[in-house]
Length: 234
Length: 216
Ligand code: SF4
Image (cartoon, rainbow over all chains, first blue to last red; front, side):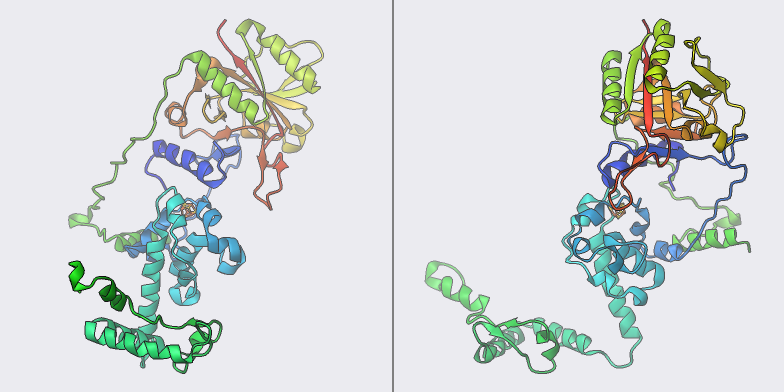
């Protein structure tokens, strides 16, 4: 919906250029109710909410409703290029589908969509109405994690791991100790890769190898490169 | 509560816009303050404007003829002869010069789509034209007629007067009446929406021809 007839001019210029790169689409029809003797003599307009007021209520997510369905974000998306339209499980494929569908149907029904993105931002770059799709994706990931936490009495492995990581990273001493401990992993590596991690991390190496931790941490390297006699603080 | 009230009240709740004192609606302070700081007009001399318009049309594979008021009848006759069109439908309000012998122009009498399909083509005037996008706009005025006559026959011949051509789309918007049934045409009808296969004649005629009438 646009505020006035005049404002339609903005979108008549944006839509074809963003959609197919044409100056203008071949045919556009404009209807203002019924014209006696020309075309249909009865006109009904149905306003359908279909979850959209729920989208409107979310301050970060509501920009999704600005979409003019030009499909520019689909055409540049590296994920869409690989997986194609059907993978999005709704009539809205591509980056816009990844943020619209979970908001329309509830995140639980489309929980994987907000994660199916590298957050490269190509969609935001091309969007003619400047929908910040990457930010909405991150926002929806957070909503999904929160919804999942509320639905459970015991925290999941992932939540426990994240909480532990946050505790370790919050202190310099703990972080240094953890890095030192991680270096033990070099002992089990072969040719720079660890094929199998022990539980509870086994899931990570089910489908991929894990590179062995570096022989030296960044801080150790920094200390070596910037000795006090070079005038730098260690 | 009607469905309409329900949807509207949900929208108000969603944007935190509840009716204020005495049920008066609180409107957004931004309402009505849409900035129009994009290109709204382009000053070009008339000849340059018509060249641009004709070039865009040709780029869309429409046939373009340029003529003067005194040569209009000859130009129409030439166009129809080359097309092989002998019987065309015209809006009742279109003021046409006398056409050459052998061409029959029939005023639209609320023909059915099947009847319209028996015509070799349609001739109409236009409401406005946009040079930059090569767009012709019909608005159902008496010299343009019902939408159906411009859509069903497979050949459309539009007569555009030089004064009707503007440079940019926003200029055309200010000339048009939003309450008219409009059809915006930019080149012959074609789409690649389905599987990138080009299909012609989907929304309207496959052949578009434009006669630009310039003051002599
Ligand atoms: S999100 Fe933006 S780029 Fe994608 S279809 Fe909608 S308007 Fe176009």
